[in-house]
Image 1 (cartoon, rainbow, N blue to C red):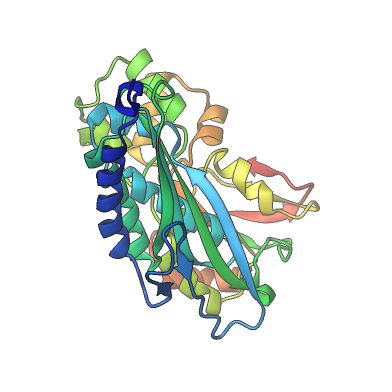
Image 2: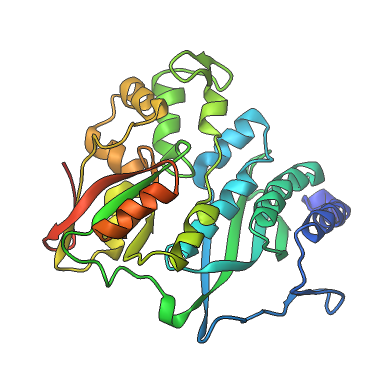
Length: 336
């Protein structure tokens, strides 16, 4: 028996790596050291302007949104979703990205599919001047279904220790600002898929009048990065806390930064809920509480600031609104 007969094609893996190398090289900047090693990436950080540099790291995946990629045979967007998700996760603490790593695992390696995935990762990295410094591509026969894969991302960022934002400065009377999402981003897809494909019987290429597009296009809308919008604000305004609205929705993520002596009251009628959520609510007969715990409901990122700074931020950027306030309490998020 040969290795190929057992399900692993080394030549296909080498082909995929060559494609990845070209895509990764497009993301390199002056901090990447070339030609030093075959097993690792080398990065020489620039700490200029940072008195006490602290490295910030995070890892994440795309979840069952990948099922939409398999279904539509469209693999060039989930990589960008992954990068943007990870960037937002470190941005909430005031960090900017330094470099990115990826992990792609599949049952049977298709170099073209891998290249499509990495093209999205490369695009996301380039948008943040962040090198795709390395990664791993694994072919594991019998572990994944035919045509399926998983992808994970690992980000390293940097922040000045004196400028870390963690919510500890949040006080009574602060306002909660919500930045609009583009749709589901990368969360709630297990519930959405069940509602759309099992309960309502839609197909991915069905056109939906309420959404003004097909089911597949609506569900594959990109997970937005808030970095270029939010990071410049950090040097202009005092921001008390920030939250990336992912799994758990607004209640599950905003409470992660609330001091134990305060609550956040969120007014759910203070923003326009995108049509995708109203449609899912209707076709799936989903409970209101589940809607707000599974989905972002149109708010992808939250900033907490005092009233003066909050109003200045609203004047500074688009697609943001006041969605709530901080009141005495016990560290809970209340939807009102």
